[in-house]
Image 1 (cartoon, rainbow, N blue to C red):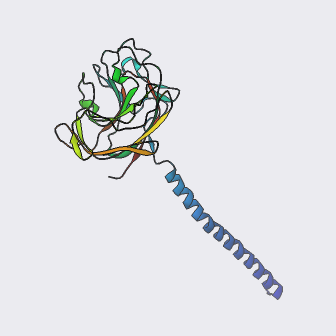
Image 2 (cartoon, one colour):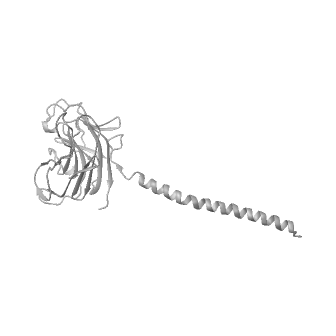
Image 3 (cartoon, rainbow, N blue to C red):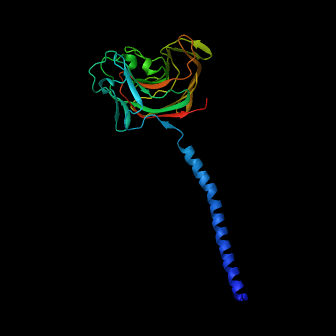
Length: 267
């Protein structure tokens, strides 16, 4: 076969074109790589919080009421209504000491917990005055399987969720210490209720609070501001309390939770 100058010229043009196409594809692929990496990185950062409440049912949660066995949802008090986790007293006529708690399935040690809630309706008849518009995030709870049938509250640290009564101050995020003690302002205190000076929220407005827990160290946050911090949380016998279960309460006041989320932290 005779190779002419024309043939060689045509072949060189074809090879040049192919090289340009390959080079173009290579450059395009390289240009897309940083973008893909950035997108993947953004996806990982977008939702680090874990939803403890799925908005559909009580999956992952177990009720326990004083006087009832673990797992019995007394009078169907804990309900999911319109995507909200509700403490509902519509099936009650009168309260006779049946304090209740709803426990999440997993214990935690280092985390942030964020809850959005609001108080609604009226307190059930017979409820104690202090329990009106009162709930709590019970943190570092004892294993619900170890709670006595007639035990009112778990050993835990309660971050009180309080609603205003229409006038005056009634700050949320106080501390209660069922079966526990802690160091407050640098000193051991055995007080059962500690007023933290948190903000007051009247009416049925939605409120979002956040608690940072690092073992035996706690920090309460409302409106993005730190309300209080304390440490050396311990059982009444002095045993350090560095982990436990999470629960919410049924203390005679109707309440709704829009969300309960958890962000794991490194120990």
